[in-house]
Image (cartoon, rainbow over all chains, first blue to last red; front, top):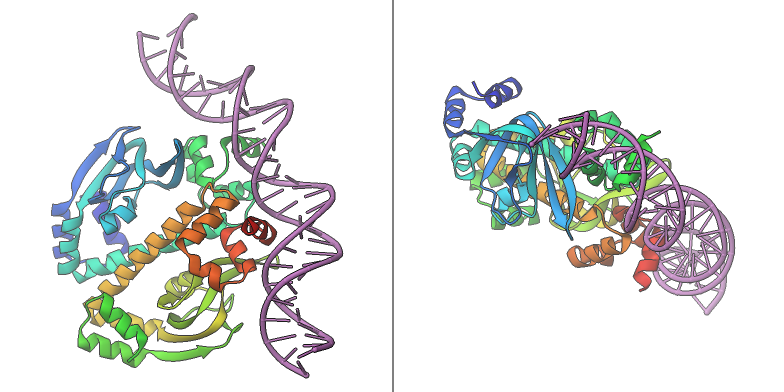
Length: 186
Length: 186
DNA sequence: TCTAGTTTTTGACAAATGTCAAAAGTAATT
DNA sequence: AATTACTTTTGACATTTGTCAAAAACTAGA
């Protein structure tokens, strides 16, 4: 069975009919390190469940990469703004470690939402969680020194430090790589 | 009719039955400037629709206020984290201009979500929009100089500059009031 | 209109962080 | 093992921003 389905079933209540229909709509995608799942300018037509590997969402300003978020196992990833509004994505999604994903088409998700109340509810709850997570990250980023940002990361998301190169982490925190390197030296 | 209801009806599709039930559950709240809608430590049991006035969500670190967000007419406001998880709020909600709000109890919202699919959908869509908005704000805050932050605000949310005192705006942007004052002088 | 309270501005200085450039370290390939 | 490419660290210095304190401007109430 897809890891996505067991993940959903162990965290939410969902009927067999919904599960089976969902299963039919999922397409497996395998990508290698440094592939791109999404490119800037592209309209994002799928929601992805990340089964294995890790990715980062970043956008490009004056030739400089700015990492917005990281995705790991059991995360839903996509360029949310593009996926929701069906407008061109401002961000890239870059595969940092070889990845296995399951893609769900926007149209087909809409069908699921229409036909299965429990999926509508599931999606609503997932949004709630993602919203809270983002808000928390935002709060943590505000009015903090570079050292505090690093200590926060160490405390709240240590897996990022273990699996992501320094340059990406620095831009995720909004500080220069050199500063991060010096902080870590201590 | 409540402004909330006409707001919803003009933006979403919603049955009469749902509208009427929702209407029953709404309680009007009137607050004055400098009242608090939510205090830190309090579990937030209501979702509020802001009909008139404006508010800010802030939290306190070492005696210093840090403004997280502003709410204006037609916004849904609450301490989302607390409301969703039913744990004590980390933030205060402070009334900046005399306000009229409509409160919806969490329990009663849950009933609505259970009984009316279109409300479940409505809430899901509202979360999508709030999520995107937050993500956008986050992207704008990252890797920007104080001047760029100010110019961004001027472009994207000029109403904030018109209606909020400088100190709140500075902490919203994550810069000191003095710096913001100097930037604005130019 | 005057007064008291609040908010905003200004100045001087200190501290934190960014930038650029080079060196050191690490990993991947032949 | 040697070469190449990529990532991380280090140093020197410039710039931005924060902090503290005081003055100025603005607001609301008596």
